[in-house]
Length: 112
Length: 112
Image (cartoon, rainbow over all chains, first blue to last red; front, side, top):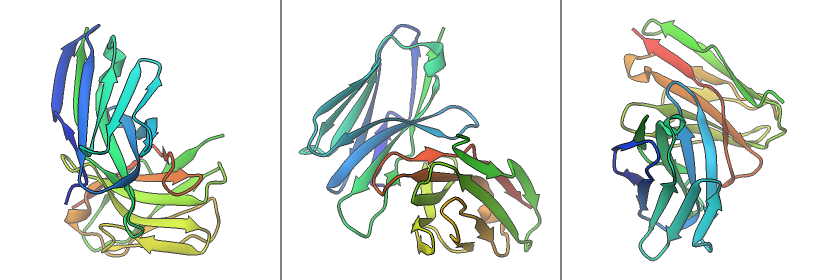
């Protein structure tokens, strides 16, 4: 079963617009991470937010976490063509036997 | 630092053949993982290791074997390749469990 699921599956926006992606998960977590993957490349870590945090910023990225709704959002402001990539959320369940679980990802296309 | 390196970048196998995917990291990370990535399914954990001499199974371990004789290296062995193992394989490492993972560039495997 999918612990983390991103929404939407695909997103296409114009350069300069903001892009918002959401991640929903099922069980309590220690932390949630967002990763970016450019086509044909490995994943690159963007930001980690812990269960006791509600919002984190990193440059043009803003991540929020709502543990009551079991959801997170990633906002990319003033998008650029170079932001075109797939974005994955990864959740770290609190249960000791579960390891980090990745969602299927959101494919973002930023049109110049 | 080279970070996480993987070899080969691309491999074609025939059904029944065996091979080893190599992974090495030079960041002195204790935690290493192997994932496979298939279209629309995100990354699925195959095996992981929390330190030299210690390995454990992930979500999809069948058909794969791992060992961790040193902190730096974490090879993944396919015992008898099957077409269902056609995928892109990523190795990742982190300083500790539940923390930021650093990914290698991936190995694209095609089993005929």
